[in-house]
Length: 183
Length: 361
Image 1 (cartoon, rainbow over the protein chains, first blue to last red):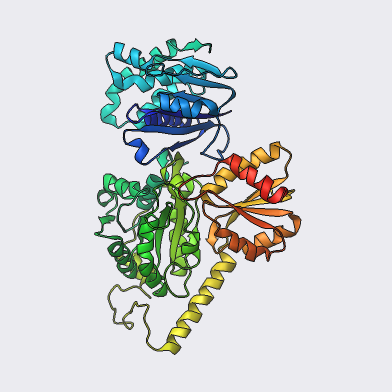
Image 2 (image 1 turned 135 degrees about the horizontal axis):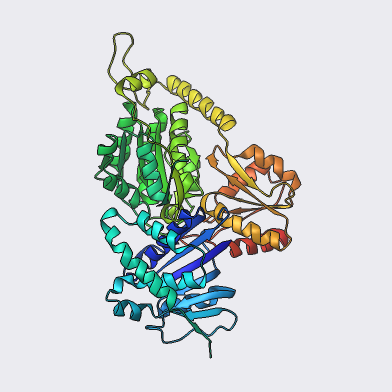
């Protein structure tokens, strides 16, 4: 199994940390992982993206042109990455703030109302965990228990009290992905 | 098995330096390697092992602090990125001339000048052909993964002390910034003063015992005959490195008609290109130099008669290609491909270049 993922959105949405937790979860179940961020001026207020690869084998290029999954969290990223999903691949997006919805017919398109659900749960910071939950419902490449282990490993001890809230967000995400059929 | 962590290349090299029992790190922050000194400051190695971590006032100061600490027989490490490494060059030439061991990491960014903060491999010439003045050589290791960023600290110090020569770890912004799984080694104790005396006392400036003359560490000798002798000695040392320290890795070369030669990040990208090529029925192989100096001349020369063409892939306008051409003595067609100025080529672009420049060329 090799899963090649791009996660893209605004800086501050938790794009890079979502990728990091996913990568750590892969390590927890003895897989190979790579996490390659965009870095530099675009991170400071503009768009941020990260390429994550989780595989049973040694990973070759951590930089890719095409992906099995694109997780898209703003319009700029939709414009840039919709065309990079491999045929038959997955595009998961938060429709909040999206003005032009994806149009491809040869990929699987799902929406997750991450921003709305996070606001309803009273904490906008768990937005990225809701989206990650939705992704793992659609492609269970890592087990939830390993995500929790990954969270424990990647968060400093003083933040471990936040893990139950993150777990609730992951579960909320898992219950809510909605299949979108492009018009 | 050691401890498994998810780390950036920059963090892994810093943690590996602490665990190696390094005595001192001197540096000055520059993107894309600032995480090295950030990590070292956050980890408080002075509490873990007694290691000194100091942000110097400039790169010129940092490299001369390295020169001084190495002269005292201490294990010393520094890192920077391209424009900072340019500022290091005078010091590196002095360190090589004075025959002192140290490990230097260059997390290369696009140039020339201040250039860009994005990855590049355009410092190949500077690293393996000189950079500083005079007939000296830097043992150069090119990591292609976060694991190797960590592993090459131990190997780098082993080689630096074996040859009393500076060792360069030549990576780039991609390897520095990406995170991968890394297995960390156990903490080694730092050398005690007594161990330094025993191992390095014959050459290091550690005080004069009654049993011998004082050690003088310098790269200067105004007597040209003596300086020529010193250069003969250095050249003999470099020939020994060239015969004993070549390291490389090959992929699918057994039946290869076409060969991609690439190091570091480009070697990782080319591995994917190789898989794409094989899926199309193209008999391609990959040759990855791990040491850039000494360059694996002989191994490439041995492969050459079996090949229809070689593509050198490097994030530069074409630097390593000169060494490949020397290695194969132009007996086989060699072309270069690479994006540069901070752009990373994709696996598909590398395959396209192989098809157009070599197979169809």
